[in-house]
Amino acid sequence: MSNIIQIHVDKHRRNLMKGFGAAVVAAAMSGRLFAAGGRPTAVVIGAGIGGLSAAWELLKAGFQVSIFEKEKYTGGRMVELQMGPLYQFTHAQMISGDGDELFSLADEVGIADQLAQFEFGKDRPRQILEQGVLNNGHGLYDLPSVWELAFNPKSAGKVPGLSTDTKKHLLLLQADMQAAKDTVDTCQARTATAFDDESIGHYYERILGDQAAGDFLPSVIQPYCEWWGWPLYETSKAALLPQFAAFEGAILPKGGIGALTRKLDSLLPVQNNTTVRYITPPGTDGRHTVHYLNANMERRSVTPDVVVCAVEAKYLDKVVQQLTPKQDVLAKSSYFSKEAVICYILDDKHAPNEYREVNYTTNHPDPLKARTTTAIATPRIPELNFPPHVRFALARSDTANWQKSGQTIDDYCFPLAQDFYPALDKKHVVDIVNYTCDDLIFMPVGYAKQMNEVLLEQEKSKRGMYFAGEYLAGAHTAAACSSGRSVGRLIVKHWS
Ligand SMILES: Cc1cc2nc3c(=O)[nH]c(=O)nc-3n(C[C@H](O)[C@H](O)[C@H](O)COP(=O)(O)OP(=O)(O)OC[C@H]3O[C@@H](n4cnc5c(N)ncnc54)[C@H](O)[C@@H]3O)c2cc1C
Image (cartoon, rainbow, N blue to C red; front, side):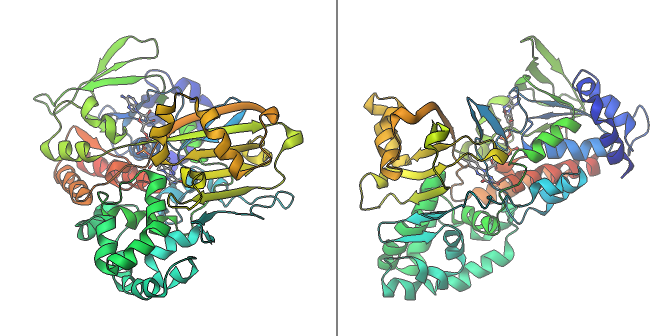
């Protein structure tokens, strides 16, 4: 505990800590496991929530830690960024209610209150029209029940347009899903290995029969997969388990999704604008050399006792030379697609007077709606630094059409956004922010098993490099945090 208090006290020295040797200062000031001079050195690569959480555990235990982050900002995919007038989350927005490790970390660093549920003000009612709902053309249904439906098929009665026969078949899912839910740790997807034997599409077809599945999949499961860019017949059903369970009771944090990563950034020695080029295989002493470009674009290298690699899965085989065969299989199985998002910022005089959101299914009978994944219109929300705007995400199936169209994304999406929000008028648009972001990591059939293999290998004995992050735990922030913390503790155990 004493080390934590000291880190708090020391937070004003953050700028000093950002410099070379900062970790040594921090570790020396903290309670430590290791005798002076005997503190192992660790370089953590990637300052997403996975890397930050690992670094936190190492620093607490007295390691001399440095964190290398290629971006000028810290937090990876758990941040808000200023984009023009819009302060916006780029990837994650909500935190799983099951994230014990993440909430306890927020508590340790003194920001638990910022992770309380954000409440929309009375003057800006969330909803009124189509709040958090899915529209499949037969009617509207609540988004939370989309998660719930996969585990509690009795609730499927809420989905408009399902046949009675389909509803009957859905009851068959209950026992199966309940067994899975009881077994799987939503923040450690390796615990889903027993359910990692078939795709999501094949699973529902097997349990429900072709006809019922043909009715249910397009209304519930397919839109879910479409949001994340997951191919229905390739993605392991194991990928659903942490997701569905995790999103039950999910929290939109009062302090914004970046509250925790911002706080950790203020406490940890993150070196931003520092890009790791490659990490060599271990030398005879078991240590790896990290080759990087520093903030001045100078080539540098360092050979610490331990490296923690917490970059996105898509970079693993580019950054790490000579992955083990198991790591290589995992790295090659990970796949990211892109989501296209556009925000039309409005002047205050023409701000929507309430928050409204809708998610459409790609089989929506209205062809314009079928080309939309999510549409949101929001008034000014000062607490979230949102100016009034309409945010629109193109359906994955339409992204290729936009790319072929030769139009800019704002022109291409304008009529679609207007279909959702007819008051949208180009005259009132004061700015446009558009960005593409990664979709959620795609876990093909067999992925949870591969994840488990890599973790078992890494747990076996002390080594010079460890891996952490969502790709080893599950595709959400609480899982990435849990992965980072558990890998951090594992290293402490191995090196004690
Ligand atoms: C569209 C989308 C929506 C999501 N929504 C949610 C949500 O609502 N709730 C939720 O809980 N989760 C959500 N997630 C998942 C969540 O964002 C991730 O699981 C989590 O943030 C991953 O954390 P991480 O630390 O493993 O990886 P990252 O946050 O990606 O961190 C990796 C870091 O490594 C850095 N890096 C990479 N290469 C190098 C290099 N060579 N040198 C130095 N640094 C490097 C990167 O810049 C980055 O900062 C969403 C994801 C996506 C894609």
